[in-house]
Image (cartoon, rainbow, N blue to C red; front, side, top):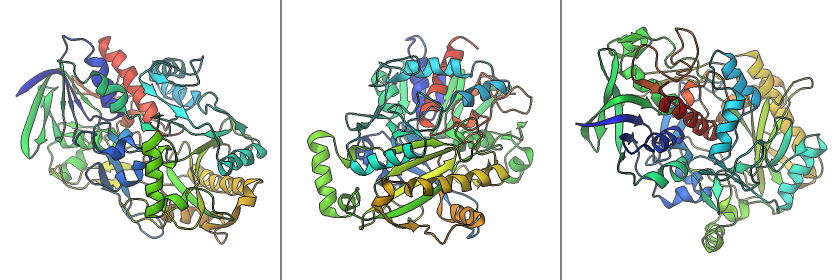
Length: 533
């Protein structure tokens, strides 16, 4: 059995950052464990490859939820199963959240997590081609970029947004007001910059850093009130490693509470029902979960513009691939969505409460867990969601068998705030597509269509045809109280030598996409760990 100073479970945006930071001291030994394989699939490096990756069980976990909504649908939540975690398979849109988001985390009793602290971290990790400033970083390990903007269809989207009073900006992260612009994305020279690319691979040759892939961790080994190591499976054989200093769970908002519960740390009733002995009765392990509910709208175009003509046929895909291979440009070098906007759904709000993303292609009705299929006729798609939902769901184990499915209760749109804001997001998207000069490009709305107009119809549509944002947080939320799962230094209460460092510890939702904020969170956590806090 191998012994390390630190055992890090999960090689996603948090785990890769911690492996980088903690192994910088050559006298400190670090083990990074990843359930998936190495990130050598060429589709990972190619930005548009995410559409195929999300349907591939070799690179992505598919977690079914409880049935919900009018149709009692079962949704599959996807998470990366490869070095880099979800940052190797996501849409690459890079947001940081607003000042108020981070200050709210600190205001809940978590000193050191306010905006001033986190902005300093973002400026350290970012490599932004727009150059360093008071609000962004350059020269850091995480490359971010934005499109220059030459497509007339996309320019019409932005112009329509400015007609609605939204400010056009090249850097959507430099302000917290209503704004629209080309997406900032983790892409460099037409290639994805995952957490593994940015933080892990540059230091992977360190003699004191061990990376174990295809290694699934089932439980934390607890001895005399301390995390002594981990136990799981590697290539079908038992696997165990010990940690002299700490075990750090970086599995995300789904896997981290699962591992804690399988280790006997969680709601006593849930553990007993699953046949797991109760070590610590911690009711909020797996509770307090928040997730974005994403609305999808699609439109048929009056002209043969956009990406459908290329991406829907074998000939078009081959042409796009040839362009990508020749110069790393074209539609295959773009993020999942080209345009991003942050807007207020009603007057009088202090800051935007909704995010939308626009792309000049449209998709056929999607089968759960399958790859995206592009429509043949020219179309556009817009998605949107309430930025800061307050509905709370949960994640529970159902068996002591680590391969048993989880009980995931999304509990979408359970509050009046979430329902009202979601309707507002939908109507804001309709206004955008109905505003010149974009309106002249639109032949008709195809999804859901003009028949869906009343508030309840919009909500039912969102629950039936919408999707998760894949941004779950809060299942091991930090806070100052005894019933908070981790404290402000992300130490799991009641167990020495055990931390959770990932999206599960966020007590409130960050306004936007999570990969960037989670990388920054882990960088900040490393500061605390290295300082002995």
